[in-house]
Length: 292
Image 1 (cartoon, rainbow, N blue to C red):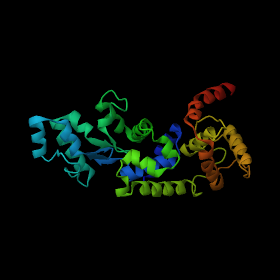
Image 2 (cartoon, rainbow, N blue to C red):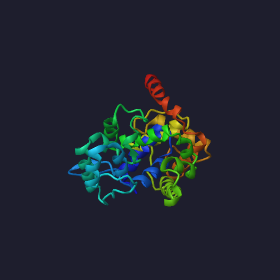
Image 3 (cartoon, helix red, strand yellow):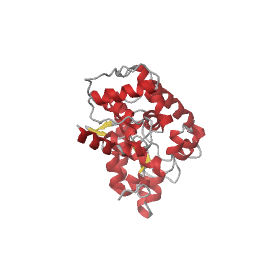
Image 4 (cartoon, helix red, strand yellow):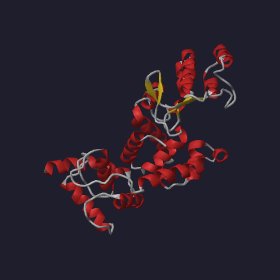
């Protein structure tokens, strides 16, 4: 599983995109093995996989022959084995980049979502370097890249519906059953969803501050209880939480404990957690600040 920091960062990006955090965490878990970054020569880098058959198609003539001789290119998928270690994979990529940087960047799957650099134009980037920069810009950049691919490929609906087979076919390819990609997604989702609703999360009440409070506020806003996203559990947040608890049939004590967290999580799929609600939060924030 990802570190607590990575889980929080991926979860925050998921809320901003209107996606249940456990869903994005599941995709990222299967694609990256639960690693948001690896240390390569003292720098935190995204996990990568170099695809030699992509590189083979992107170099030609004597350069292709040179790449094949150097073990960097092959006409067959899997013809260039990826080292087990990420430092060695980065060394392989950098060796290819010295031969043809653009082709090398396009031949790598980048970050949490393992998005191919070759998709840069299709995804609306100015060039492949812009895609690479996004993948290397902390966890949030990797999540944005993964979401960009999911949305462009028309897979967001399948993901939010937990239609694992449909999502797997679109994201992993028609051979997804061979490596049980859909089953891996389902298992990872259950693990992260159980973690979110286990009741072992933060017990929050008026006066609390921090990322957990902001997460609570984001959930309340997404469910139609607008508050300022400031990470401060004040009177307005308590009032909104009490309203939610009352309407959900809970004890309206204004404290976010295990039962309340579970109720919030369970409510999100049924209320839609639509992106357009998040888009209105800036307006809510401005209006509420004006009222104060």
